[in-house]
Image (cartoon, rainbow, N blue to C red; front, side, top):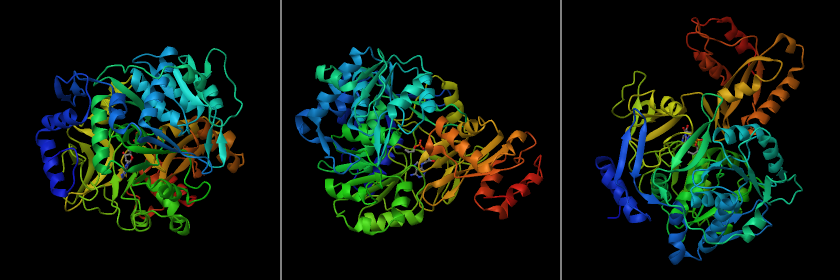
Length: 635
Ligand code: WT7
């Protein structure tokens, strides 16, 4: 029996048992048989959640790009590695073979070196979904530079914060990007951000929209001419298994985003192994994940996981509704997509449109459907199952996080019977626990609690860049000797998990993880605002939308409220990005607070969600009267 490819439910249970009874020998076998190492490890796992310190394959040496590219050259050299589908369907798709990917990554790696980047340096990547994005990640990995991808929908301020936090020497960007019928001037956003970043010495600019842009003498260089002149051979830097591969920022409960640090060996093993099994990937499949590489989903399941398996991975530049709402299904038909992985928010938006957008296309190539990013509601699940999978393609509802690096709770298609809204069973090697308020593990089934993980897994983030203390406090302090996910979950009568949502100050809007604190900080910058509080409320496409309660300063009270609303959203757009804009803004004279001065968000959340029958005890509040005022004026 090969533990690498699970084909039925009994096999899942057997392999799972092995992986928890003997985690070290289990992962050692997977690592040994399916990857290329320059040197083997001295030990498989060392861990101590109290520090916290975790290392996998300590002492081993490798380069992840040798695993993702070089080793496929003999067997799959002409096979398509990356299939690029442009924003505009009239522009032809590009097939980049493994051989060609090898050349392009090596050339790019040589350009990075020539521009002074070496092992351990941080490189910020701020690019749209064009091939250069995937190639830039791999080029950094080739020379041991640590990439920090910032989603190209983030604002100049958000970009600058991330660049400064990890002290990036270089930014890789493009003149601009296409987004449906619109173009976005990425380079000018970079220019604005860099006014506040003295660490950046070089900017490489890919050409995408052929706009005329400002190039700063001595700092900015067009990428293509440098690539043209570079050699197509760049020896891979030999990395230790625990050397950082990348930093990726995620929102937290303070204004400062957390730079999650992922290392090389364990991340590679786990993303490759999950990709193979969760998508039941087979040699001639064409796999498409619609995420942006700016998020962890794209890192792990567009780039590293698929390429480590020698897969064909589709990168699509566009949006689901351009030129019309049939675009996704057109791509599925055109490239005979076999695995399709997307977010519940996209499914809900697509389900609102006329079914004829789906029915026009032949979707018979599809074998496995996936979702990720937030809980999927029952209605969206059924729409996806009935109309896209035609009740034949299992849906894998995959629960995981930026911090976990790879998929943690998920069905294995054709093995695990699916159940709408349930992420079902822990993946191989994952040991979840539900915890109660007193820090005790809740045993048995038909229970709910806070979701923790009891044992390390190979792709877990090792620290927060520059702030190990915050890593410890955020993830390893709420429950003793456990990784705390920040999510609530329930376990049903057969042991299936259903994720019920965040239990902290993070709100997931359209699958984007947003912290309340940075948004409130932005709102409070408005000169007329005294104080604010943000909560989520249910939204039929976004999952959650943002509701802001705002107290105006006396000087602001005479202003036209709609103008103030617009200005607040403008400031949010500048500080974070348009994804964090508020759907509703209610002005109020006060916010419900505890006697210790803490805003009672629970009450605000219920009012915004129209669940006011059961507000709980408000008598202990410092200012109980304000609750009635807020309820009377709810939007
Ligand atoms: C949070 C992590 C993992 C890549 C995308 C998001 C929520 C994620 C599911 C799911 C219910 C989910 C959780 C998690 N989440 N997948 N299948 N069902 N909730 O990564 O931005 O780090 O967000 O997304 O709340 O904690 P992220």
